[in-house]
Length: 460
Image (cartoon, rainbow, N blue to C red; front, side):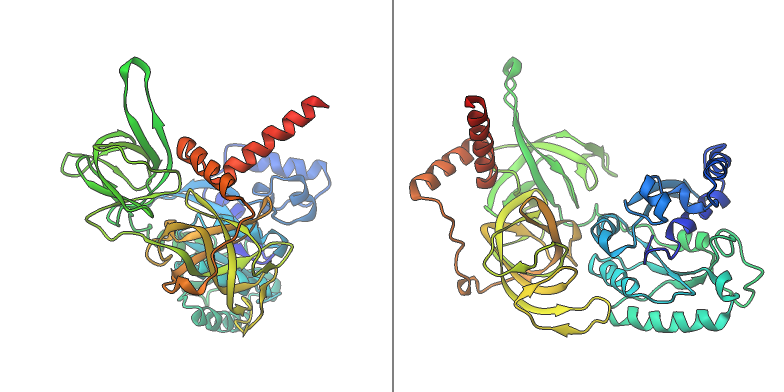
């Protein structure tokens, strides 16, 4: 559930929960009594807004989750904040969703953030979207207001490749067209919010996609003669069986699966598999050195892409602009590497879709960029596998940006290799520690610095 601040997202959800009897016994009455004791008018949004600042200021700050079910299926609803300052929280919530309801205030109309949120949903690959035109009671249930908003926002969505499932006029406060048809808007013949939820299609299973499992860790057991060396991770897509030939990317090392050790489920033919959506582990027939961040693929399926650079659509949230030449930490799946911005092809205004050319990416900019990495990475184009095609960029100690992979950059010779201020002897020492522990250079350096600081503190 997304949309501009104070357009009624939390109220829509609260009313939906109340009208479908999805609340615990006494919850609604207790909240009404709390509002009475504090001399505050009751709002259905308070069912979602748990933080003190959320209730006092009437805005959503954190991405709240709630659960309910209809006769058709169970749901997790993510209530994402609408304020531009909490756009990072909105993206966090939206990245976990398979469909979206975008709420717009009929009285205030289409705001800059309404367009920005629509673009973010498109960028994250969410194509199932319905627009909820809220607060129709404040515009006198006027069909003309609804028609104008549906026309204008529908045209914007068409420009970013989204065909909405529909526009639903509602009054969340009064309950019109939430779970039951509104008699005051008899001119509307479409679905209610509840009917639209049930009309969304469940996400296509990833079990039939090419196998993708980013390596979380490699675990060695020695107790009682146990010699297993288990490769573990979360299966993002596809399935794997004992005996399958696998390839670890980006190294390209190959082996076969000896045994499945965790997250095993029964296949339709009665066999044992590890499949998408499970945390799993397996052993190999031959021992190959793999490390956290590698992606496991099946040798008989399309592999990930690999490279030291890719093009991307990037959304920047950092307080300081993203600039060329500066080192950042890039995280994709379980992989981490130093990275830098090497080209800014264009900057897109997410609210107007107008593009400009700049040499840096400033806060709230959406940019078409080229990024280069210190180490070779395995990745997918986001349209082909979103789970291994999304990444975040860390500046210092904060996640400052995120994006989706557009494609591998073939002509890497155009880019100057990353130069790190590390001597040859230190580099060799880091490589030895990395081979022994499985840590990357950044993790080793951070650990050594922490240990040195503790040593200095102890001496003082």
